[in-house]
Image (cartoon, rainbow, N blue to C red; front, side, top):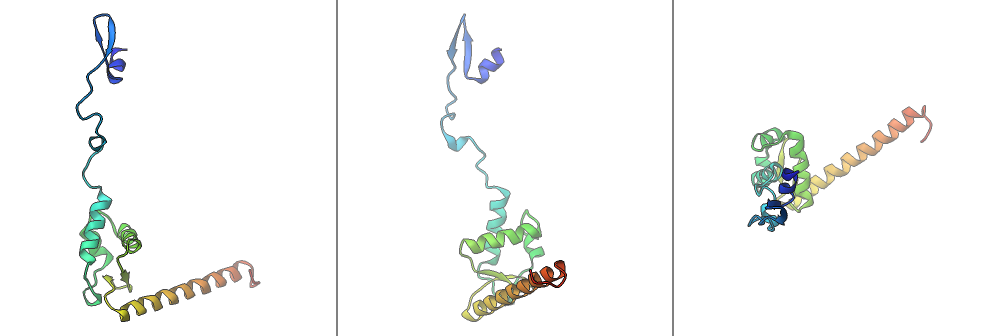
Length: 137
């Protein structure tokens, strides 16, 4: 019982129970959790720093990015998507990641995305036709 009471911040003094002295840092939430950056934050910073200013001719593969961070290739893809959502114009043309640095590269990236979306729509239609025996979905 007294161990439980001690965890609750009370101590036995004579026959009465009185509040224990609070720890000097107990009320400061900055000291409640570990202040070191998470593995995710470290990896995201490393990916952003590696890709910043890196053009098409200096692209880097997902495996190389993963080797420079504490995460794997699939997590690197997620981090790149997160960096894009945060405003970093990073893309991969299948041969490595790089930051878009010109209007020409931006237009090429957009055209590639449009072609990929068109292929995905065609695949959906083919799959639906195959599943329903050639009938439209």
